[in-house]
Amino acid sequence: MIRWACGLSLAWTPLVLLAASTDGEPVPIGLSVVLSSDHHADALSLRQLGDRHPDLSVLDPRPGRNLAWIDDEARLSFTRAAWQWSVLARSRSTLRVDAGTLRLAADVATDAPGDATGQHWRVDAQWQGWIGRGLALARSDVWSDPTVPVADRPELRWRLEGQWLQLTRWRDRRLLGDARRSGAAEAGGGVRGYRFTVDSERHDSTLALPFQPPVTAFGQALLLQMDASWRRPTGTELSLSLRDLGWLSWRGLAHETARASTDTRSVDVDGQASLLPLLQGHQARVDRRSRAEPAARLTVLWALPGVPAPAPRPGVDLRVLPGGVRLPSLVLASAPDLTWTWRLEGGWHERRLGAAIQAGPLLQLAGARLGIAFGTDRPGAGARSRRVGLMGGWER
Image 1 (cartoon, rainbow, N blue to C red):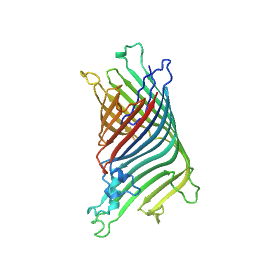
Image 2: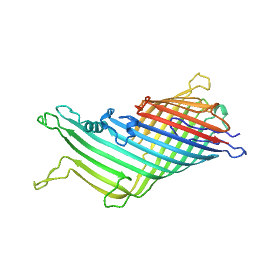
Image 3: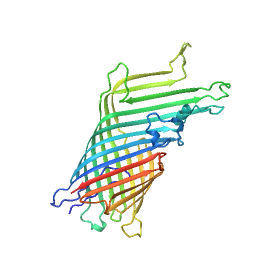
Image 4: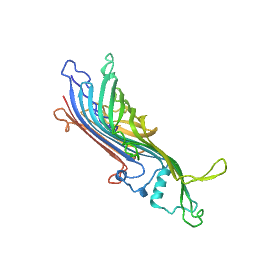
């Protein structure tokens, strides 16, 4: 007997088709398409996030560190037994920014009157984003102990995938410093101005440097994805996913370091005063090679005691984003190995509710499998967090 398992959840791991055993029968094959999109912004709506020149006056940051990310993927896969070959395109960006930086941007955009004593902001922002296309090869399997009775036999499922991507865009930027706006009392009732010192470091494949040749057209990425889950017959399950372990590289990437400071007066060791430029820095081409920013996900689901199977399984989910950002969620999932499966999830930081449904008697026809998922923090154009996915596949 050929047994298949197909996975699509709010974690948006790619479609996994597992051939547990062929037992001399024809080797199972499958074809699938997965489209997934996960966008989030703490301080403004997703519609404004996508604008080329967003209105910064409407920024509404949360206290402390604010997050924004884009994680999109389109994938076409062919599966034969436990092996899967894929062509894929990915876009991933992550922004971590202090609330003071966003308040400063909003203050500059609105030219707000402020208070009489002035204001002070801490500037701290880090952004990395890349776009790539390429190939992936994955191997998956199911391990269990045949000496243990089936009713008591746990299973260990795993999947390992390597990705090679041709990068078409890579941006990496860091801002660090502080800024201050004088109050009416300091200005003596006159014009109030800003004083700031901000350091910037930037690697950018789209940055055109004067008097230098264009940036090399493409970069490279080698990434590793790993999934493992341990499941008891009762339905209790522990899952761990690791994403984007590997390296990014680009030869001849534009590199810029700069300091912007209103403190333009300097005194040397001889006591002589001199004036410094408001903006100073350095630009060059460099061969850039750095570790990709990995992410992880841990999910625990447990069977409800005293409730006959198949019963829904409550659980908790913890995502760890680049920079060590932890995002907990509450989960309610259907029992495994049903004709159709579903999953509900509520993200604490995202303030987002989501649902996913896969296959089902009404959606399964002649070996076809379908799945759909959607999650949002609020309806309409004001949404700040949204996840959408669609999966379609055929297997024989």
